[in-house]
Length: 230
Image 1 (cartoon, helix red, strand yellow):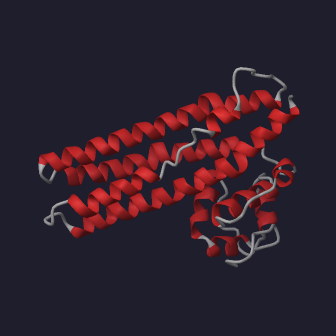
Image 2 (tube, helix red, strand yellow; image 1 turned 120 degrees about the vertical axis):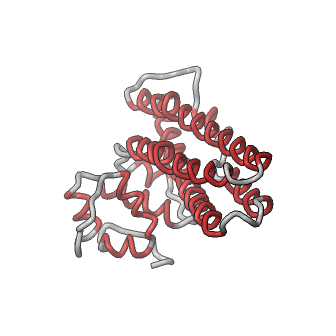
């Protein structure tokens, strides 16, 4: 499976077995468990999800070397792309980031105040950066795509404005783990540190995949609509 891209004929259970992190994709599309031996096509049809869209997301999310062509993107039903990305944002801002923040503050409040404040400040700044990134997408980029699809031209904006400044949200999480590794005092329970680091690494990995979906699907999709509206 590791050398093959997913298709609609594969059993949904086998897709999740090949990459358990795709459970997050199921939740963002409100696809419930209990699909038994059904194929991806059958599960998607039962839940009103375009099969080609689901397969595209799974392939980009799972295989870093998978690069959909513009033809593939243009011929894929992407009506669920913005809702999917919005659900991802909600997951990060409402679930994961507050969860890590609570755990980090618990540790920071029980170590030397100097190091505790460094951790809190670093994380607060990062959380604000993520919020700003998502706000830009939700209030500028997504509406821009919707307007393009409705033949409303915005001469003052181009996806290049977003593309040229599209940062990697996971990079600073790597810096945070380095701070934890190097500077937390040895009297902090190793279990607490281990749990915190695993949470950060999981979030970092998912954010990286989120970035790939934006760069390999969202941006090319908007570029296609820009060309159509020239």
